[in-house]
Length: 268
Ligand SMILES: NC(=O)c1ccc[n+]([C@@H]2O[C@H](COP(=O)([O-])OP(=O)(O)OC[C@H]3O[C@@H](n4cnc5c(N)ncnc54)[C@H](OP(=O)(O)O)[C@@H]3O)[C@@H](O)[C@H]2O)c1
Image (cartoon, rainbow, N blue to C red; front, side, top):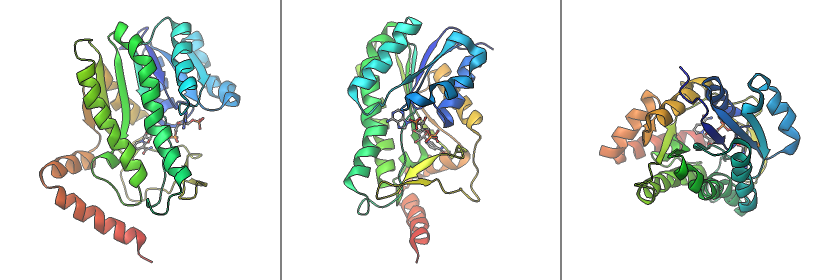
């Protein structure tokens, strides 16, 4: 079914990983996509994977932590495709380490790449999305249900998306705009994916042994179903849904489970 025929999507951070998988599905369902990543030199490599979709796909190098880049990203998308229907705020770095260990530069990078950048792009996109009664989607995480030890920066920014969605739903009521966030579950990472350590060094992402991990295509499908059905919040996976419900009713239980997990993780 061509659910997104001629709909224009801007997907931040879609040079790889989940963003690229979402783009692939949108294009196969008739949509048009502005891909994004920070590096100009990746353009031909990224676009190479989408040759079959011709001019329904473009790549715009822009660092969303810069307001100027965020504005240019939105404007170029609109100039090329003539409008914008769906913004997916997907870009963002992750980091591992306690807040005490994390350098100020890492704190800034995690907040800027996930939160400030998503708010910049949303700010510039809102007038166009209002025009088309489109969608703004935030890719949050199970780490936003209850703060995780060693992920204080990541849990903070992913929780902040939930506040943004709740506020935007008020601010855009009456404009016919859908605003949503997904508490994304564990999703297969690109082999090249990096995470920041507490000092700002880039490290390989540890393999999640023993945990159920969705494929990128499966997670992309859930995000797109949410957008198509204009749902506000979606929690992915049985583990996520259980956490979400128990945390609502008895947050102390989730605190206890996650505290034990953190202790095991940090045991010398
Ligand atoms: N994978 C999971 O299990 C999981 C679970 C929950 C939530 N999530 C969330 O899902 C989203 C995608 O995750 P992923 O695993 O696909 O991550 P990823 O492989 O690291 O991809 C991140 C993307 O963001 C781009 N990016 C980073 N900083 C940017 C910036 N300042 N401006 C523009 N683009 C930027 C990167 O492009 P360049 O490097 O080319 O610039 C890359 O395309 C993230 O928000 C993540 O937090 C992932």
